[in-house]
Amino acid sequence: MTYWPRFQGIAASMGSFSLWHWLVVLAVLAIPAALIVVAVRRAQAEGGVMTPGFKGWLFILAVAVWLTPLRGLAEMGQMLGADGAAAEHFPWLVRADLAITAVTILLSAACLVLMLRRAAAFRTVFPIAAGWIVLNFPLSIIVARFLLHGVYGVEVGLPALFEAMREDIPQWIGGVVAAVAWVFYVRRSRRVAMTFVN
Image 1 (tube, rainbow, N blue to C red):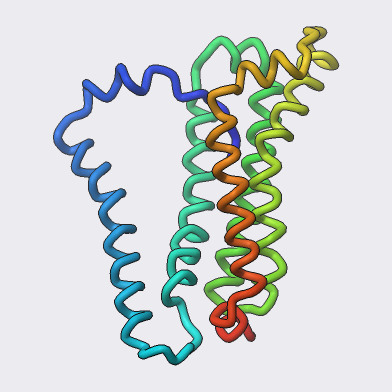
Image 2: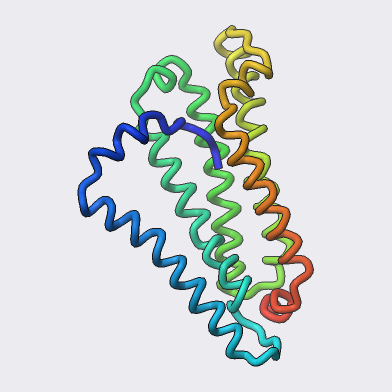
């Protein structure tokens, strides 16, 4: 997940949402919640006997794996459609973020294909993809500093860059915690081991 562009003015634009926009937002929130409830009920119906398949926590992980490449494509579309001073004056920053997002999309798409095929390689590729997603934020900062100094001759210290991205740090920390938890689950879960055997 890259952090380009920064979502400025979201609060101002929320007042201009139509009823259809709010219905779409509600559907986006309600559908995964309903799927999670169905997955929990299905897991309880097993009667305590562990069986392979996308049930319980593995179902929730599968939904996340499905959404990750879609989110990357949405971010890439936003970057390509962004009209702003930063894109005009610092095009290499945009290109670097596009490259980082492209790698994220490729890794997450590989995870999705392996998951759908129930391939044993999913248990190896998923931690790599999760690690890459976690590293996106610090990598974006380091690449931005390098490009600003090396290409544009603008000296910006790491503290200044971190200060500019201060609002994104809590989201990144949450992402790190989630990624570590999911990697631990994929490596230790009996259901995952039983499901990904091809």
